[in-house]
Amino acid sequence: MTTMTRTVTEQKIEPQEQVKLLRQNMLLCRSLGHAWHGAGDSGKFHVHEKRKSKIVAVSRTLSCTRCKCSRTDVYDYPSFDLVKHLRVYPDGYLLTNGASRIWRHHANAELFMRQAEPS
Image (cartoon, rainbow, N blue to C red; front, side, top):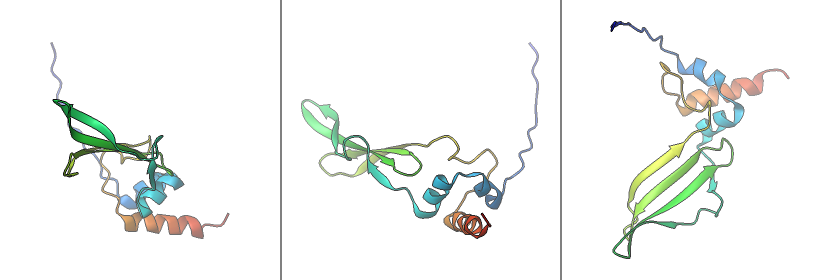
């Protein structure tokens, strides 16, 4: 068996370059936040977990109307403290390896530049 050691030098991708790769709908979500809407059942709560016939957790699933990201939040019952959340992002939304975080001001600047470009 041969063991190979590889040194990977990741080049950091600046946020100003990363935002240029995002589709318009995803850029809007990064600028404004997601436009959450009930997924399938208008965002109703559902029993997530029961113990000895008693409800101990409820959940709700929402989806973004712009980028199609989905979000499931699980709450303790009856306090409704958030205990877990899961997000599933569409292809192309998450940053590539080596990318810096994209802040809202980066998204806003890119939206402005796209708006200013001649059609």
